[in-house]
Image (cartoon, rainbow, N blue to C red; front, side, top):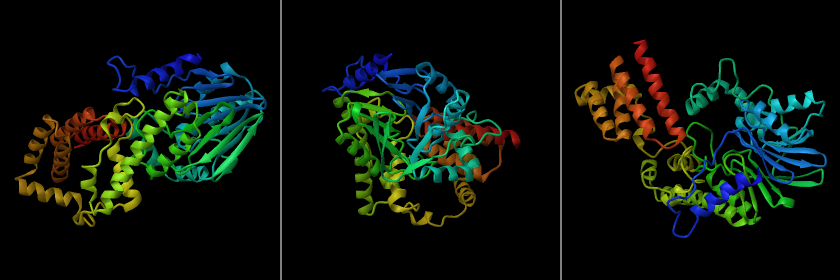
Length: 432
């Protein structure tokens, strides 16, 4: 079991970082697997591949776990863990408070209670509990966001975004915390990145680093358009800080573990380089007086980097990160004076439709543009038409255009928004 995951990642990293680029038959993955199966990576170290992964370290005082996976996978993760060890869980560390990292804690703890084990110590950054409070206050909003992002079947009726049996943090820290558990030291560190409550851990005895979502075998989730602020510059700085430790084993919460100092440095360095370049170029353009539209349409990441299997924009994407950098440093106004206090969207749509000769002219043009792959303009025009005129046929066209656009997108975030627009269009047409 040990060689399968580590050999796979070694083959992928070696091929894609070779001088001259990867050969035609370079291995590609799959890097992100949700098997809920356990693999032993080293003596006393196992990983359960799930959403998110669970890392398990065996110590003389019991198990130390990093993350608990989600409520949807918690029971299967627990069952897989127990094929490897029936020892009590001494410590559960949350790398951060996202529900796919904490939502399975109820299943793990329930299993321990059945076995007569003590309640594990739950460790996390001091901001995790504030995140939990925010999730409870915005339960409906977050349920809707995740249904849109991952599909409408993710949460059933009566479910909460943050599961009610999620274990609270018992031991929190601000900057760093050294945990000595059964003869093994885990050095926890806080860094801003995907979240404001993120932690990563250095395990000196193994020269291993548990990085949570700082590495996920996708382009960094630093721009999610439906979630709170991310921190690209600080994320890159955290990766550089981890690199300085010269780790020999990289343990992410999504994707493949990576063995070997050179391979680990390649993965971490690529991620840091991409984020640093985006921050540098966006801030430079802002300082030169550019507006957001100009920056979005000019700042790019090296396409050769984006081809690498651990860098592909299949979840988040650079364009969204550009917008998040602007939001972080420049606020919500995009620099266009007309959009500081714009007219209601429906009023603008009716005005444009009248100038064009009616909403039907906008619909026809939107269809023509969609047919040749000009999806950005097609969606703008069909939105104006839909606001200017109530017509079930128009909404069916809107559904078709957004289905086409979703099919042309690479990132899950964009696909989710556009597929939801298609679904809602069909529902609107039926109700008219």
